[in-house]
Image (tube, rainbow, N blue to C red; front, side, top):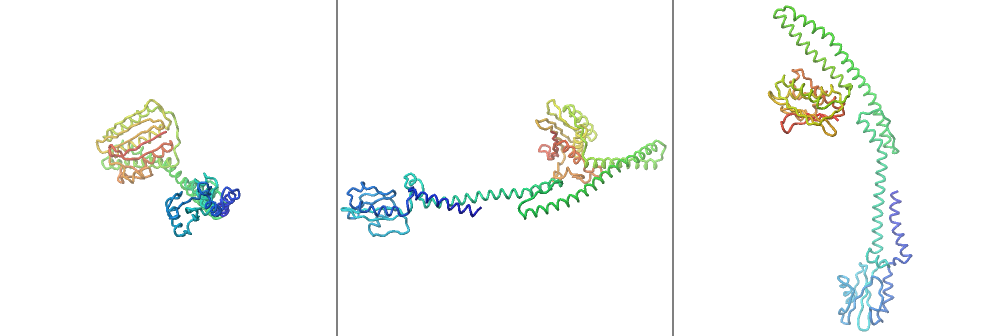
Length: 435
């Protein structure tokens, strides 16, 4: 296609020039020279040069017998060369403008004519370059146009052949391995697609085994956690009964150890259950919730939590009467997780700021503390399982699950959880957006 296009780019302009010549619209290259030479006797014999019809593009210089200029239609370098030719007879062979010396009775005439094709039409002659130059311009434009068109067509065809590759990589990146790999008409691309297909099938088989093992592991953990609740309840019930009997000091100390340890075991079991539920996804029970009433309920719980930790709570609700759709209990848990974190990280006597605002698209709840804020590491990883910015908090029964659970709940509501540091308090700011 490129060879045909380039051949056409040259052939078409040549054909147009030949048609122009055959129809008389364009002259031959020696037309002016022949016309001027045929006109020379007439110029020599005619008393008044203005009575002579000169060919198009032909100009003149009239000199007296002393070679002093009388009249001319030339100017600039053309005039200088015509004068030099009249005096010395020298012609610059590299120029396409030539001269003819004509002797009249009382004067000399130097005629300048053009060697090359010309347009017969005066408008074309004045506004367009000579046909030879126009031919080269058209050939250049045609070649560039052909190359651009063929490059665009080639790129379009290449994109079409690459489309199965793009689709395959996109599906794999989305962790979707349940699809058929497309095909390409280009052998090399088809070989790559076959390799992708084999890789996808092997990866799918491997991941399915891994996912099944992880699912079985989660189910076993959940079952074990539920099974542990029964003997733990028995232990707690019996230690309560023991505490009601008369015990000496040593026995009461050991009973305290058992009570404390059973409480820790209860926390561990609840954490295991949370992990299994979060990994499997929560079952949402969506309902229409009144915003004002819901935020009052959140405020009551947050007040109780902050009072126990000697933290102030400042709550502000900037919403008009309205409702939103969510799982009331799960969303409440997500919000309280964040408020609990804010209270834990606030300095003694600090303040936790909670602001709720209803926009056209979201219910936005912002929780800000006066602590040291998120570290750069925490901003990237705080929503992951078991991440703890402060490693020492494990001793206080914290396992880095709060923001992970909150993030899972918000994502299931098709919302957003945004972590940042507050410009006002310099502490951590968590923004919950629920559509």
